[in-house]
Each structure stands twice: as C-alpha cells, then as structure tokens.
Image 1 (cartoon, rainbow, N blue to C red):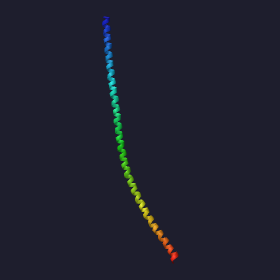
Image 2 (image 1 turned 90 degrees about the vertical axis):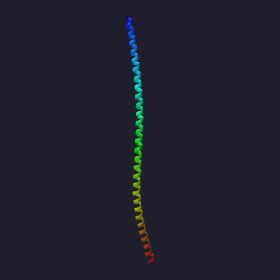
Image 3 (image 1 turned 120 degrees about the vertical axis):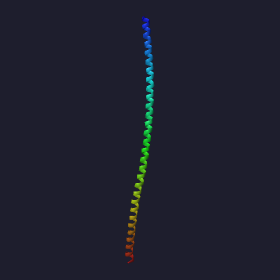
Image 4 (image 1 turned 60 degrees about the horizontal axis):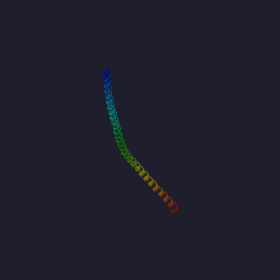
Length: 107
C-alpha cells in the first residue's frame, strides 16, 4: 500500500512536471510570437512614418518652390520699376547736364 501511494505520488509528480514543461513551452512560444509581432509592428510603423514624412517634405518643397517663384516674380517686377525710374532720372540728369553745358559754353 505504501508502494502504491509512492507510485501514485511519483506518477502525479511526473504528470505535474509534464504539465509544467508543456506550460513553459507554450509560454515561451507565446512570448516569442509576441516579440516577433511587436518587432514587425515597430518596422511597419517606422515605414509608415517615413512614408508620411517623405510625403510632407515633398508637399512642403513644392509649396516652398511655388512661394519662391511668386516672391521672385514680385521682386523682378519691383526691380524693373526701379530700373525704369532710374533710367528716367538718368535721362533727366543727362539732359540737365547737357543743357547746363550748352548754356555755359554755347550761349
């Protein structure tokens, strides 16, 4: 009877070890899958973030180029007006100088 109890205890211990080993293996498998899934999620999010950042940079670059063209166009118009005004003043100055020279020397 004692031997039967010891045999039963050993069998129960063996079954318990088997259950524990199986649970450890399943837990390890679950953790490995979770780690793999987590790593893949990080990679996916990084790729998505990179794509979004590139899209935003492209949009900002396009807007910046468009704005720059507008600014350059406005500044070119201002420069043309200033140049025209300067030429008029230069023409007037030259005329005054010529008139002054003619009055001094010619009259």
